[in-house]
Every structure is written in C-alpha cells, then in structure tokens.
Amino acid sequence: MTDMTKSLSLHLGLIALLLSLNWLLPSYHHGNLARIMVLAIYAIGYNVAFGYTGLLSLGHAMFFAAGMYGMALTVRHLGWSPAPALIAGILSGFVLSVIVGLLALRTSGVAFMIVTLMFAQSVFLIILYFTEYTRGDEGFVIQQAQRVMGGIDLSEAHNRYLAALLGFGVCLMLTWFLVGHPFGKTLIAIRENEERARMLGYNVYLHKLGAVVISGTISATAGALYGLLFGYAGATFATVQYSIFPLLWVLLGGAGTLLGPFVGTLFMFYLIDFTSEITTAYMLVAGVALVLLTLFAPQGFMGELRKRALGWLP
Amino acid sequence: MLALENIDVSYGNAQVLRGFSLLVAPGEITCLMGRNGAGKTTAMKAIMGLLPLAGGQITMDGKNLSDLPAHKVASMGIGYVPQGRRLFSELTVMQNIEIGLMARGGANSAEIRAEVLDIFPRLRERRDQRAQTLSGGEQQMLATARALCLRPDYLLLDEPTEGLQPSMIASIRKVALQMKNKGVGVLLVEQRVEAVLSMADKVAFIENGEAKEVVSVKELRRDTALLQRYVGV
Image 1 (cartoon, rainbow over the protein chains, first blue to last red):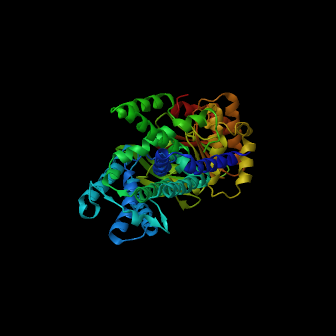
Image 2: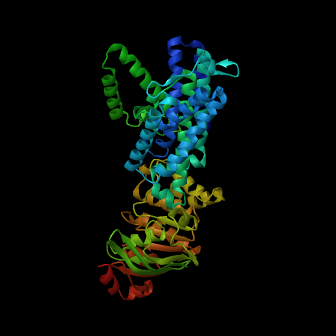
Image 3: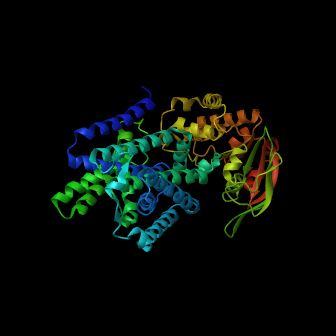
C-alpha cells in the first residue's frame, strides 16, 4: 500500500467513523461533536496559513466573523434563504482574505502578527459600531424557520450533525488534495526556507497570498456554518480570543498535519468540558495541561505520531 | 555571458560593492576570491536579485537582470547554492528535489530527476531521509542537486567545500567540472586555494568591494603573490 493510499484510507476512514457516530452517540456528545467538527473546519483553515505556510496570524477571527455575518446579515436583513446566505458568507471571507492578504503580506514575522491582529480588531469594532444591523455585543438569533435548506431543518440534531460532517469532510479532503498538490508542497518549502524557495524561482508573495485566501475562505466557511447550524451570530466570535483558539487547537493537534486541527479541537473542547465540571478554575487546569503538552509533545499529537511512528502522515 | 558592470551595492549606509565588474563565461569556471568581508557573497546575492543595485547593471546573455525580483532571476536560468546550504530541513531528500523540479514547471521532471540522482548516487540511497539528518557533505550535494534541477545556464556556488571532508570536496569538484563541460558558466566563491587551483579556469580577485586582477589559473600557479596580496595565504 502506498503512502498516498494509506493516507487517503485514514482520512476517509475518519469521515466514515464520524458518520457512524451520528447514530451511536448520546445526544450530549452528539451535539458536542457537531460543534467540534465546525470548529475543526476553522482550525483546518488556520492550519493552511500557520501549519503549512508558516504564517502566524493573530487575526483569523475576522475571517470566521466575516463568514458568520456575511451569512447571518443576509438572512436577517435581506431575507435570503440558507443556501445563498451560506455562499454570501463564504464569499465575504474570500473577499476579506484577498484584501487583508494583499496588505498584510507586505510584512512578515512579528509585523504580520500585529497587522492581522489590527485588521481583526477593526472588524470587531465595525461589528460593534453598526449595532443597528449587527446588534453588537448581544448578537442575534437566526430563527428556526430561517434555517431550513431545501426542506431540511438544520436546527434538528441529526441534520445539523450531518451538515457539520459534510462541511468538515469537504474541507478535510480539500486540504488533503492541496497538500499533495505542487502548490501545497511549495507552501511547505516556503515555510521551511522562504529565501531559498524564492531563489529556486518561486513567487513567494503570490503563494503566500494564495495560502491566506484559502485559509481565510475555509475559516469563513466555518463561521457561516456555525451561525447557520447553531442559529446565532455575535461579536464574541470576532474577538482576539477567537483568533487565539485555532492557534491553540492547531498547536495541540499538530501544526502542519492534516488531522491535527481536528484532534486538537476535540482535545481542547473536552478538556475544558471535563475540567469545568470539577472546578471553576477550569482554565487553570487547561493551561497546565497545555504547558505539559507543549513541553513533552512540542509537535502536537499528530506531529509526534508522525515523527515517532507514522512518517507517511500528511 | 553573465556580466556585472560597475555595480554598487550597499547595506544601509555601508557600501559593500563599489563599481564592481565581473564576467562569467559559459563553459568556464570563474572563481571569486578575496578576504572575509570583501563582498564575494554580496556579489552573488546581487546577481540573484536579493540585494538592490544602487548603480551599474547585471546582464545575462544580453538580458538585463538588474531590476528583476529573485524568483524571476532564478527562472531565467541561474542556479544558486548559498553558503550554509539552506535546505528545506523538514523535508526528505526526494521532496527537496521535487521542489526544485516543480520550480521548472514540471517539464522533463523524470529525466532531470534521474540525471541529478546519477550525478549524486548517495542521494538516491538517502531518498527518504529528512534533509536535516544528512551529513554536511550530503547536505551540500542535495543543495547542489536542487539547483541543478533548474538546468541552469549559470551556476553560483558559495563556498561549496566549506567544512567538508576530502572525499566530499572531490565530489563537488567533479560536479563543477561536469557542469562546465556541459557549457554551464560556474561562478565559484572559494577560500581553499587547492580547490580553486584544481577546478577553476580563471580567478577574479576582489578587495574592499572593488574588482582587482583577473588571472587564469595557469598564471596564478606561476605567480602566487596575488594570493598572498588578496587572500593572505
């Protein structure tokens, strides 16, 4: 079996496993997993920029929020049905990522982090400023009647789970294809040694722009899906905290690994879920766990697995 | 012909190259020699478009390279193996080579891959090993192999024998001569006199960013005073 076949089987196997869990999980974990899959899409998007291209952004919440509000505002104010609204959300993220990419990629390193953070803060402030439309901090609920797509009620638990799985599966396999494609390999080369890639004849700026756009568009897809499936859009999702989350998920799961974002999101979600039942200082416990993991598994779960046993993991 | 004509290059306020000129002919190995800080690596970086020119121009076979960004210079047929190798350390040997092949747009990849691996059979043995785990000599081979994937018309080698054992130096020398025989113009920055004398056709000296004498290796063998004057050996 070639490495490619093994990797394809593993990824399709995970999707099949998640599909079967739709009928096996108790309702509490069923709801959690739907949420985790949508958040994992966000982490997958972040991983394209950070894990595969080496672009450390502190402002990815703007893309998530662009997707969420691009979808939710068209539903709320223009009365669009979910399908075109979802596309509007994804396109919002696409356009924003082109604009941000063109400007922010004139910088690198720490300056890139700061510029992306500033852009994200601007988006957050715009959401607060136009309270009349966005309801600012409070956000707004998307009614159940507005979440019916082609006769399928997306607020119903099983439909929501399957829609989340569909989005997750598509984004996972899209990045699987991307990483195996020459474009993806070039991104890895840029991450490893930008100057060297340039000297081999690669247009580093355009490749990085491509990475930011793909990353931003996937993140926006997550935002649009989140709003649609869970029926809410709020400014919280545009805060700096929501830019840090995907970084943590990706670091924990394994930056530059395809399954890392999902594993990291799953781990972090349940770590907070379990510890919050035991103590009110759950973030302290989560923090200690993160420090330990960073010390003893610096490449994240999947990164360590790739390093120690499964060298073929993409 | 790769020609540097009266180029000026500065790092901020510090001018490193002052009206520097150099000619690299196809099918010839030209060695650039000078003391540390004389401007040898700066000249190579200027050719590659990594440093802007404050004056003068660089042409390759009549085409002006002066204002081109680095990626365009490389795609016009100049391969550069920098000092310190600069590999994609997390990638395997084959993945490093594939990145080099893809830079050409993928044309004749299988043929070039086989050609490069024939030149460096050691890399074939190490094909699935991560670049960072290779020895210094193997890393130099890989860096050179990756540059050869571009099938360059001109090849720039910056201190390729630095820190290598004699057998590895012999391999690098063999490759430089092979390239020369194929009509590739090789520009070599090198400190080891014996390596220079064994492979170069001519030597250009540089001092404080200015071009000095250009002599054939035959002349240099007869009169080693120039080495004493410009390199201190």
